Image (cartoon, rainbow, N blue to C red; front, side):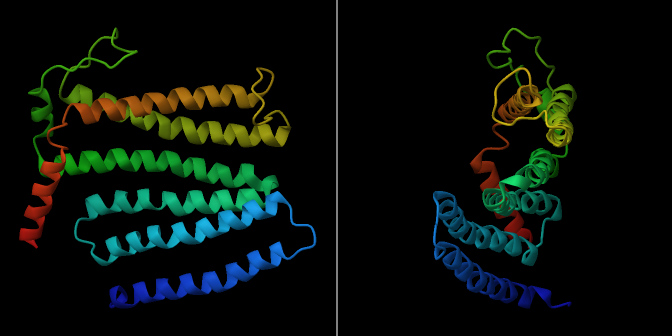
Length: 249
Protein backbone atom coordinates (compact mmCIF):
# COMPACT_ATOMS: atom_id res chain seq x y z
CA UNK A 1 0.00 0.00 0.00
CA UNK A 2 2.93 2.33 0.55
CA UNK A 3 3.83 2.00 -3.14
CA UNK A 4 0.31 2.80 -4.36
CA UNK A 5 1.66 5.44 -6.74
CA UNK A 6 3.25 2.68 -8.79
CA UNK A 7 0.18 0.49 -9.27
CA UNK A 8 -2.74 2.94 -9.12
CA UNK A 9 -2.51 4.02 -12.75
CA UNK A 10 -2.20 0.48 -14.20
CA UNK A 11 -5.16 -0.51 -12.02
CA UNK A 12 -7.18 2.40 -13.41
CA UNK A 13 -6.35 1.32 -16.96
CA UNK A 14 -7.47 -2.25 -16.22
CA UNK A 15 -10.74 -1.05 -14.67
CA UNK A 16 -11.39 1.11 -17.73
CA UNK A 17 -10.80 -1.82 -20.11
CA UNK A 18 -13.07 -4.07 -18.06
CA UNK A 19 -15.76 -1.37 -18.13
CA UNK A 20 -15.55 -1.24 -21.91
CA UNK A 21 -15.80 -5.04 -22.13
CA UNK A 22 -18.98 -4.91 -20.02
CA UNK A 23 -20.57 -1.73 -21.38
CA UNK A 24 -20.13 -2.31 -25.11
CA UNK A 25 -21.92 -5.70 -25.16
CA UNK A 26 -24.68 -4.17 -23.04
CA UNK A 27 -25.19 -1.40 -25.60
CA UNK A 28 -25.12 -3.91 -28.47
CA UNK A 29 -27.67 -6.07 -26.67
CA UNK A 30 -29.97 -3.07 -26.26
CA UNK A 31 -29.66 -2.22 -29.95
CA UNK A 32 -30.40 -5.81 -30.99
CA UNK A 33 -33.86 -5.71 -29.48
CA UNK A 34 -36.73 -6.05 -31.89
CA UNK A 35 -38.02 -2.50 -31.54
CA UNK A 36 -35.17 -0.12 -30.87
CA UNK A 37 -36.51 3.39 -30.42
CA UNK A 38 -34.81 6.74 -30.56
CA UNK A 39 -34.56 6.72 -26.76
CA UNK A 40 -32.42 3.57 -26.72
CA UNK A 41 -30.20 4.88 -29.50
CA UNK A 42 -29.67 8.13 -27.61
CA UNK A 43 -28.82 6.15 -24.47
CA UNK A 44 -26.21 4.09 -26.33
CA UNK A 45 -24.64 7.21 -27.85
CA UNK A 46 -24.55 8.80 -24.41
CA UNK A 47 -22.82 5.67 -23.11
CA UNK A 48 -20.10 6.04 -25.74
CA UNK A 49 -19.43 9.61 -24.67
CA UNK A 50 -19.46 8.47 -21.04
CA UNK A 51 -16.68 6.00 -21.83
CA UNK A 52 -14.72 8.79 -23.49
CA UNK A 53 -15.05 11.39 -20.74
CA UNK A 54 -14.56 9.21 -17.67
CA UNK A 55 -10.96 8.09 -18.32
CA UNK A 56 -9.78 11.59 -19.21
CA UNK A 57 -11.03 13.09 -15.97
CA UNK A 58 -10.04 10.14 -13.78
CA UNK A 59 -6.55 10.09 -15.28
CA UNK A 60 -6.11 13.78 -14.48
CA UNK A 61 -7.24 13.09 -10.89
CA UNK A 62 -4.78 10.21 -10.60
CA UNK A 63 -1.97 12.41 -11.89
CA UNK A 64 -2.67 14.87 -9.08
CA UNK A 65 -2.72 12.04 -6.54
CA UNK A 66 0.57 10.62 -7.76
CA UNK A 67 2.22 14.05 -7.82
CA UNK A 68 0.63 15.35 -4.64
CA UNK A 69 2.99 18.24 -3.86
CA UNK A 70 0.64 21.17 -3.14
CA UNK A 71 -2.35 19.83 -1.17
CA UNK A 72 -3.97 23.23 -0.58
CA UNK A 73 -4.23 23.74 -4.35
CA UNK A 74 -4.62 20.19 -5.62
CA UNK A 75 -7.48 19.23 -3.29
CA UNK A 76 -9.95 21.74 -4.80
CA UNK A 77 -8.66 20.94 -8.30
CA UNK A 78 -9.43 17.23 -7.86
CA UNK A 79 -12.86 18.02 -6.45
CA UNK A 80 -13.57 20.20 -9.49
CA UNK A 81 -12.38 17.46 -11.86
CA UNK A 82 -14.84 15.01 -10.30
CA UNK A 83 -17.64 17.16 -11.71
CA UNK A 84 -17.18 15.73 -15.23
CA UNK A 85 -17.60 12.03 -14.29
CA UNK A 86 -20.50 12.84 -11.97
CA UNK A 87 -22.32 14.87 -14.64
CA UNK A 88 -21.68 12.27 -17.33
CA UNK A 89 -22.85 9.36 -15.20
CA UNK A 90 -25.88 11.31 -14.00
CA UNK A 91 -26.93 12.16 -17.56
CA UNK A 92 -26.48 8.58 -18.73
CA UNK A 93 -28.47 7.06 -15.85
CA UNK A 94 -31.24 9.67 -16.04
CA UNK A 95 -31.58 9.12 -19.79
CA UNK A 96 -32.04 5.39 -19.32
CA UNK A 97 -34.29 5.63 -16.26
CA UNK A 98 -36.25 8.93 -16.39
CA UNK A 99 -38.27 7.91 -13.35
CA UNK A 100 -35.28 8.26 -11.03
CA UNK A 101 -33.83 11.33 -12.76
CA UNK A 102 -35.04 13.65 -10.01
CA UNK A 103 -33.09 11.64 -7.42
CA UNK A 104 -29.76 11.43 -9.26
CA UNK A 105 -30.10 15.08 -10.28
CA UNK A 106 -30.42 15.96 -6.61
CA UNK A 107 -26.96 14.54 -5.90
CA UNK A 108 -25.51 16.20 -8.98
CA UNK A 109 -26.87 19.65 -8.15
CA UNK A 110 -25.60 19.45 -4.58
CA UNK A 111 -22.17 18.57 -5.89
CA UNK A 112 -22.38 21.49 -8.33
CA UNK A 113 -22.70 23.87 -5.40
CA UNK A 114 -19.78 22.11 -3.70
CA UNK A 115 -17.64 22.61 -6.83
CA UNK A 116 -18.32 26.35 -6.86
CA UNK A 117 -17.27 26.51 -3.22
CA UNK A 118 -14.03 24.67 -4.06
CA UNK A 119 -13.29 26.92 -7.01
CA UNK A 120 -13.52 29.96 -4.78
CA UNK A 121 -11.34 28.19 -2.24
CA UNK A 122 -8.80 27.40 -4.94
CA UNK A 123 -8.50 31.05 -5.97
CA UNK A 124 -8.18 32.31 -2.41
CA UNK A 125 -5.66 29.59 -1.49
CA UNK A 126 -3.53 30.40 -4.49
CA UNK A 127 -3.56 34.12 -3.76
CA UNK A 128 -2.93 33.78 -0.03
CA UNK A 129 -0.08 31.30 -0.59
CA UNK A 130 1.49 33.49 -3.23
CA UNK A 131 0.72 36.78 -1.50
CA UNK A 132 0.43 36.42 2.31
CA UNK A 133 -0.49 40.11 2.56
CA UNK A 134 -3.40 39.71 0.14
CA UNK A 135 -5.67 42.10 2.05
CA UNK A 136 -3.08 44.86 1.84
CA UNK A 137 -2.65 44.23 -1.88
CA UNK A 138 -6.39 44.51 -2.42
CA UNK A 139 -6.56 47.69 -0.36
CA UNK A 140 -3.89 49.25 -2.58
CA UNK A 141 -5.94 48.56 -5.72
CA UNK A 142 -7.96 51.28 -7.40
CA UNK A 143 -11.61 51.37 -6.45
CA UNK A 144 -13.62 49.11 -8.75
CA UNK A 145 -17.13 49.94 -9.82
CA UNK A 146 -19.87 47.37 -10.07
CA UNK A 147 -20.55 45.88 -13.46
CA UNK A 148 -23.86 46.51 -15.24
CA UNK A 149 -26.66 46.17 -14.28
CA UNK A 150 -25.43 46.79 -10.72
CA UNK A 151 -23.35 49.83 -11.66
CA UNK A 152 -25.69 52.09 -9.65
CA UNK A 153 -25.17 50.13 -6.42
CA UNK A 154 -22.76 51.41 -3.74
CA UNK A 155 -19.18 50.36 -4.36
CA UNK A 156 -17.59 47.72 -2.16
CA UNK A 157 -14.54 48.94 -0.28
CA UNK A 158 -11.27 47.41 -1.43
CA UNK A 159 -9.48 44.99 0.85
CA UNK A 160 -11.09 42.81 3.50
CA UNK A 161 -14.62 44.05 2.78
CA UNK A 162 -14.41 43.11 -0.90
CA UNK A 163 -12.88 39.71 -0.12
CA UNK A 164 -15.54 38.93 2.49
CA UNK A 165 -18.48 39.99 0.34
CA UNK A 166 -17.24 38.10 -2.71
CA UNK A 167 -16.81 34.96 -0.61
CA UNK A 168 -20.24 35.45 0.90
CA UNK A 169 -21.78 36.01 -2.53
CA UNK A 170 -20.34 32.73 -3.77
CA UNK A 171 -21.10 30.74 -0.64
CA UNK A 172 -24.75 31.75 -0.65
CA UNK A 173 -25.18 29.59 -3.76
CA UNK A 174 -23.76 26.59 -1.91
CA UNK A 175 -26.62 26.99 0.57
CA UNK A 176 -29.41 27.99 -1.82
CA UNK A 177 -28.79 25.25 -4.41
CA UNK A 178 -28.95 22.23 -2.06
CA UNK A 179 -31.92 23.78 -0.25
CA UNK A 180 -33.94 24.29 -3.43
CA UNK A 181 -32.91 20.83 -4.61
CA UNK A 182 -34.30 19.23 -1.47
CA UNK A 183 -37.49 21.32 -1.81
CA UNK A 184 -37.77 20.17 -5.44
CA UNK A 185 -37.46 16.55 -4.36
CA UNK A 186 -40.20 17.00 -1.77
CA UNK A 187 -42.45 18.77 -4.29
CA UNK A 188 -41.89 15.93 -6.77
CA UNK A 189 -42.99 13.41 -4.18
CA UNK A 190 -46.07 15.54 -3.46
CA UNK A 191 -46.86 15.84 -7.18
CA UNK A 192 -46.62 19.64 -7.39
CA UNK A 193 -43.19 20.01 -9.03
CA UNK A 194 -44.11 19.58 -12.74
CA UNK A 195 -40.63 20.08 -14.21
CA UNK A 196 -40.48 21.91 -17.54
CA UNK A 197 -43.90 23.52 -17.23
CA UNK A 198 -43.30 27.26 -16.82
CA UNK A 199 -46.44 28.09 -14.91
CA UNK A 200 -46.89 29.94 -11.64
CA UNK A 201 -49.18 27.19 -10.43
CA UNK A 202 -46.33 24.72 -9.84
CA UNK A 203 -43.19 24.75 -7.69
CA UNK A 204 -40.69 24.27 -10.54
CA UNK A 205 -41.14 27.83 -11.82
CA UNK A 206 -40.35 29.45 -8.49
CA UNK A 207 -37.39 27.18 -7.79
CA UNK A 208 -35.91 27.88 -11.22
CA UNK A 209 -36.16 31.64 -10.64
CA UNK A 210 -34.52 31.36 -7.21
CA UNK A 211 -31.73 29.12 -8.51
CA UNK A 212 -31.00 31.36 -11.47
CA UNK A 213 -30.88 34.52 -9.38
CA UNK A 214 -28.58 32.87 -6.84
CA UNK A 215 -26.31 31.44 -9.52
CA UNK A 216 -26.07 34.72 -11.44
CA UNK A 217 -25.11 36.59 -8.28
CA UNK A 218 -22.49 33.96 -7.43
CA UNK A 219 -20.98 34.26 -10.92
CA UNK A 220 -21.06 38.03 -10.58
CA UNK A 221 -19.07 37.83 -7.34
CA UNK A 222 -16.61 35.50 -9.06
CA UNK A 223 -16.18 38.01 -11.87
CA UNK A 224 -15.74 40.93 -9.51
CA UNK A 225 -13.25 39.03 -7.36
CA UNK A 226 -11.26 38.03 -10.44
CA UNK A 227 -11.25 41.58 -11.81
CA UNK A 228 -9.59 43.17 -8.76
CA UNK A 229 -6.49 40.91 -8.47
CA UNK A 230 -6.41 40.47 -12.24
CA UNK A 231 -2.67 41.08 -12.44
CA UNK A 232 -1.90 38.54 -9.70
CA UNK A 233 -4.11 35.94 -11.43
CA UNK A 234 -2.71 36.58 -14.91
CA UNK A 235 -1.09 33.69 -16.85
CA UNK A 236 2.33 35.32 -16.48
CA UNK A 237 2.10 35.21 -12.67
CA UNK A 238 0.91 31.60 -12.84
CA UNK A 239 3.92 30.65 -14.99
CA UNK A 240 6.33 32.42 -12.63
CA UNK A 241 4.75 30.63 -9.68
CA UNK A 242 5.05 27.24 -11.38
CA UNK A 243 8.70 27.92 -12.23
CA UNK A 244 9.45 28.89 -8.65
CA UNK A 245 7.76 25.76 -7.33
CA UNK A 246 9.73 23.65 -9.79
CA UNK A 247 12.97 25.17 -8.54
CA UNK A 248 11.95 24.50 -4.93
CA UNK A 249 11.27 20.83 -5.60
